[in-house]
Length: 434
Ligand code: GDP
Ligand code: IMO
Ligand code: MG
Image (cartoon, rainbow, N blue to C red; front, side, top):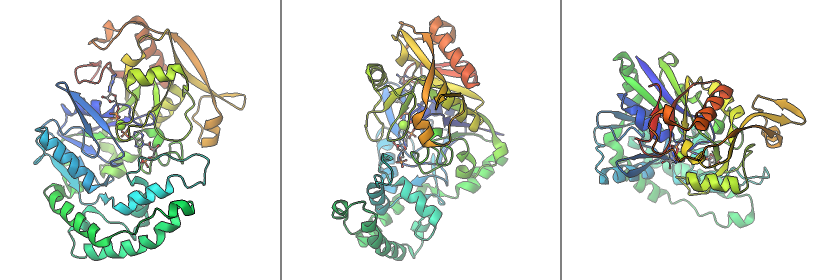
């Protein structure tokens, strides 16, 4: 009995989807356990690119069950759209998808609150959320009194609950607007339309909804192999990331247990996913960010534009201080280094091995976001490699300087590199140890 987790160790978009798809081949069940439609995971095989948001990236293997567990916040319209798109591409979904009745539901008021609160004016910089209603839905979950779970959609009191929540939200929404100008844009919620829309969504989702906790605990007893798919990245974790510039769930390794309901002792392997460099979307400090031609070159070569919002991703050198912190936090047993091909052609490549904070060299990741905003990265410079490597299939065939880069990166982070990715497609993966 065992489970493997795939966790992003940076600020998201580390190419978790690609590795989940790859490792699904050895699994019986794949589980998404936190986040929601803020995630955009990409899987490429057979020359086709698939984008997934709420549905686990294991869905392409018909023999594997894909589970949306209790810690996910589900936008019914978004997941139904995804189901339709997958069906249209010929993916068998009917028997393969299970959605937790305990998962919380995103409603139109959550998206409206996200829009109003994103730039509250309390801090100088906006969080820059994906506007998918994620934070407000998790806030209602913890607050309890105005939360609705998937299972509640099927209860007779559902319409009445929606009407009561709409009445409350219609009073609170205008008060959330940071300015009078924004307040003018707040439109009242139409409770009857929401009831009708969500009753219809609930009907269409019904074949997939069930008690995921029991299902997973039975699978533990039956010695099934599970793969747990993290969304976002560890530095966006609400407790251990760059707060408040984070998402509203535990997106580091600490979230696996709470989100899935699986026992901690079941987790045997934790694959920490990192890009060979660093990216970030949205606001917040990013010590190794390159606001210059080098950053633009990484963006162009890596096609670094958001999967969900198409925003240009901020790009910078590999930050080994941050990755060491998150890989230790999540108990990573190994690293999977992604998009190494993007770094071909640079004369020199840099790894951030320490920070300078107020004149002092530090190797820990500061807990305070203002400290992190002030640190100056200390780089180790290594020679680059000119060869394109997107066709390389074995580790030994990588250019010597690329291997040296990986080895140094692994040394500073303190974890072995078991997978190296040199292109978006399934085949463009060098597996050293699976
Ligand atoms: P996720 O959110 O962690 O699943 O990552 P995203 O899908 O948002 O972003 C990763 C992007 O990199 C996707 O467009 C992938 O197709 C692409 N990708 C994955 N691995 C590689 C790689 O090794 N090289 C290149 N050039 N692109 C890759
Ligand atoms: P995947 O799973 C990258 C970022 C947003 C914003 C912050 C809060 O594809 O790696 P939210 O909408 O969650 O309240 O936004 O988190 N963010 C992501 N960045 N990849 C993601 O997911 C992200 N999900 C949220 O840009 O800065
Ligand atoms: Mg993504």
